[in-house]
Amino acid sequence: MDTKTLEQAEKMLDYFDYCYYFTKYDCRPKMNNKFIGLRKNNLTTEQNKELDSYLKTKGNKKILRGLIKHKGWKFYTTDDDELSKCYGHYIKNWHDGSKEVDFDPLDDFTENDLGHVRMYYYTEKTKWAQL
Image (cartoon, rainbow, N blue to C red; front, top):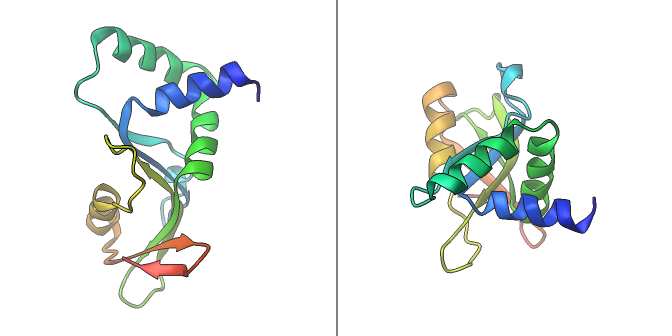
């Protein structure tokens, strides 16, 4: 990927409060690799148009998923008996630039849809850690 493409993708990623995608969404294969994000509420009309155009261009969501995978957190959610699992990658854009774990939007999504009540994230130090 060339520098200009990467810089543009990073700029578009900064237009979101958070973004994620599932690499495996239990019982719902149509959710696999679907880009999901919440736009920042202070975007200008021009920034919203720019983001809309970017997201409609073929291949750009794949580039964003790659950035989320590279810069964000690997996670999975599961139910109490750990038989149903959803895996994916998540990133949160904090205004102060920190990279803390905050999966509340994602946790609400899988809990409401599949009854998942546990969430784990991956770090090199601890491997899988429960939130």
